[in-house]
View 1 (cartoon, rainbow, N blue to C red):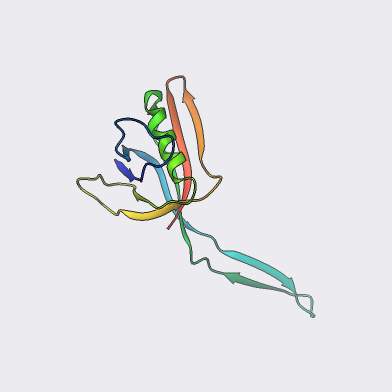
View 2: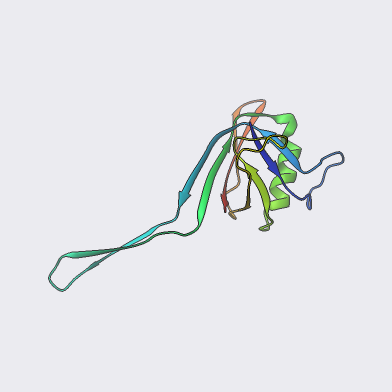
Length: 127
């Protein structure tokens, strides 16, 4: 089970508390490293790598009933402007595992429909 907590700010729903618990199919950590190759005067290539200091998580939910769509839209709209939220891939509100404060990377929110009654949400967060 996983956990998201956010401040409701856009597309708010009556009765929503700004918290979502769901199973995540994927929550893969990554760094953005940049490598460049430049030819030297003797013809060999020189590679320079800049190791990324920013940590990212690529997140994908398990299939979620379409009836929860409005809550997930509220979440995506509330954090789309760079607002902080809490992400815990394996814990719950009552029993946190590794809760971290993150921001959603703009332009990464995607909705897939693996079946007629389910949605899968995927996005990238920056620590």
